[in-house]
Length: 171
Image (tube, rainbow, N blue to C red):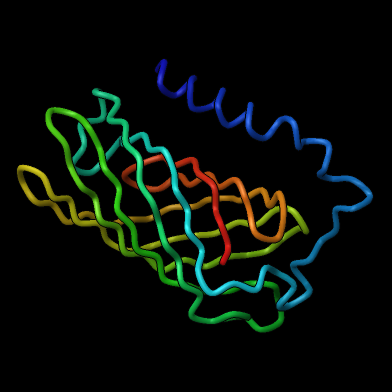
């Protein structure tokens, strides 16, 4: 429970200084403007992790760190009338519990750019755990991004089997 409270406190500390930016006179809905989102070829997201499912014991508070790389496959679509894109993400997450484990996620990611500073995404895929026994687990989750600039965003992802908080860097 302390780990969850710490995670919430960190997220609030990162977002609170920018809370006045949305919604302001500069904030506008862009979901109906196809293609009005960062033009990027690669998103790199270093993040901190708290595992709660899959091969990780939910009661031990398994902490970790990792990185995710997402490559856009469809820059504007698959629904051409709204502001969305579709990509594939791969990563490496390192967890510490009774020993250490490497979790390798491979996901499809669908992004919806709702406001000039805010986007949502859904992900689905699989993750392979290495370390002791090998596991293959499904991944299903949702997340959101607060875009500080066109090239930098705070990302929060809640998906089975972990919560991630990180920074998305668009290249």
